[in-house]
Image (tube, rainbow, N blue to C red; front, side, top):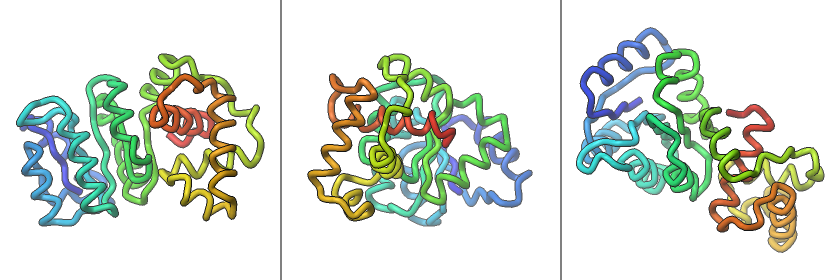
Length: 217
């Protein structure tokens, strides 16, 4: 694992905490966006843990790193740590799919079991979203409707969406036509009350609803 944070005490503390778990090996640490990208290229870790704010701008370096790594090293999972729930950043992080992506609030780091479980899940290509993030996003969008109204096929399509697959890939996985997938996704959006959202936001919110309902977070 590569861990990136510009705070020395945080880097040392998290590294020491993870040293207690034999399944996680911190191969190196980074202090900014450039050193993180370089470290990943040099060490090819299974997963990256990064703060959302680092030099040079201390704004969204963690999100930018995740998107770049997904493009250049698609097999590497990325877990982003944030002090607060930042909706725009969550949407940006998940815009290209949720597979191999995690978003945790920093107060979860002190819970070794949660942190290790998250790192392992994301390294396997799964998705982990902090329960507080899911709760806040769903509440802010007013889309907390239950999934019980979905048909079996709609839930299957939503489950595929939650793995980060696009419509064409979903169609192949479920032996459906692209048009049928679009129809089911449209129905999912309708039943979850996501009719007024932008396309990317609707997909993200639908996945968040699925993760909350199944306890996948």
